[in-house]
Amino acid sequence: MIHYLFMSNEQTHPLRTTDKIIIDSLITKEKPDDLDFINLARLLNRYTNFPGETEIKNDIEKILKFWKITKNELFSKTKNIWSKSFRPPNRNKDLVGSGFDTSN
Image (cartoon, rainbow, N blue to C red; front, top):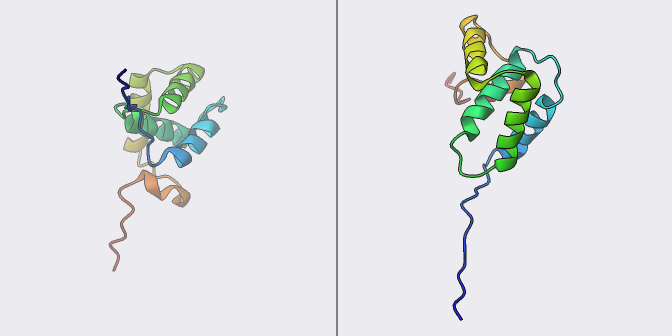
C-alpha cells in the first residue's frame, strides 16, 4: 500500500492578522468613507493573486456586494480619491509608501 502526502497550496499571508481586523471592520460599514474604500482596494490588490486566504477573499467579495460596488467601480473611486490629494491619517502610515524614514 502506498501513501501519498498531499501538501496544500493554501498559504497564510504574513499580514493576515492585521488585515482581518480591517476586513471585519469594513464588513459592517453601511456608509463607507474614503479611507474605507482605500483600505478595501488595497486589500483586494494584496489578496487577488495570493495563493490562499480564501476566507479573506470571500469577505472582500461580501463587502463589495454589501456596498453594492464592483471591483472596477472601487478602483475608479479610489483613483479619484487619491487624485484629490487624499492622505490617510498618521495612524495608517502603511497606506502610503514603504514607511521608510529618509529624514536623517
